[in-house]
Image (cartoon, rainbow, N blue to C red; front, side):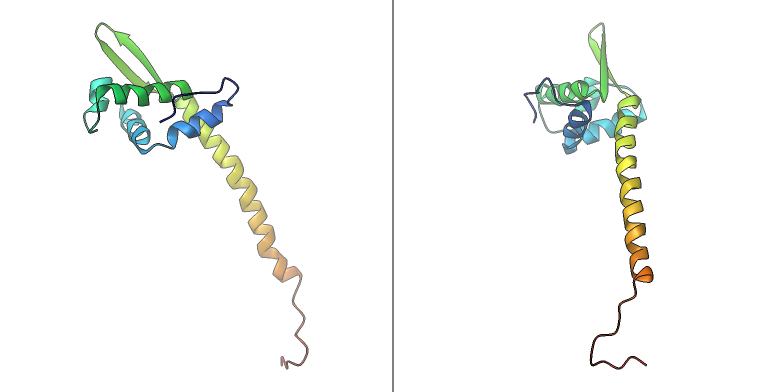
Length: 122
């Protein structure tokens, strides 16, 4: 688990570092349905509440999750803008690579290979 953050780490790096862990991805999946208390988030996991809280700190630091304490209950919710930032980053790379692959696919049609010497291509 990430315990040390560099102050100059770009936000997109923090976001993907947070999403790299399967436990945190499951927490994000749960929060995508509705806000949940820390106890509700901890239910499906075989780990201490302190470990769940550490995961939540990573998610909060990345901007993916926001928590609010009302009385004795801390409720967590997903931050949609952070998810949109990840989606935008991935989409930009997909668009770039799709364009490159399209150009690569056009190359053989534009540059036919001449027959090798000694072969009869009729």
